[in-house]
Image (cartoon, rainbow, N blue to C red):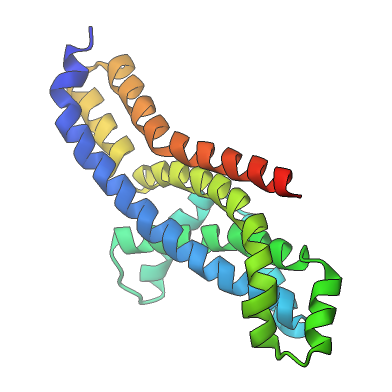
Length: 215
C-alpha cells in the first residue's frame, strides 16, 4: 500500500530539507527581529512603542499567505527584483517578528516591578538593568510561548508552495500529480511535519510545567 510513498521518500526528504531551511532562516530571523522590537517596546515606550505596536497590529491583522502574495507580486512592481524565495522569506520574517514582538514585550513587562525599582535605586543604567535583572527573569516567560509560536510558523512555511516556491508540500503535490497516490503521499507529509514539530511542542510543554513549578 505504501510502496509509492517509500519509492518517493528521497524526493520528499529533499523537500523537507528545503522546508527546514526556510524555517531556519524565516523563523530564526523573525524571532531575532521580534525579540529586539519587543524589548525595545517594553523598555522605551512613547512614540517608538506606538510605532512598533502599529507594525504588530498591521502584520498580525493580515494572513501570512496574503503577505507572501504581496511580497511576491508587489516588490517587482516597486522595482525591487528579488527572487521568489527571498520574497516569501521576507514575508515570513515580518510575520514571525510581529508575533514574537508581543511575546517578548509581555515577558519583559511581566518581570515584577519591584525588581526594576530596586535596580534603579542601586543606580543601574537601563542597559545594565536589562542585562542583569530583566532579561534573566524574562527568559523563563519568553521561551515556552516562543517555541509554540515557532511550531505554528514552521507549519506556515507550507504556504510558500501556493506562490510557487518549492519545498515539502510542493514536492508532495508534484509526486501526487505523477502517481495519483494522494492519500499515501500526504500521509507521509503529515508524518514528516509531525516529526519536525512535535519535539518543539514537547519542549514548550516541559518548560511551561517547569516554570509553573518554580513559581
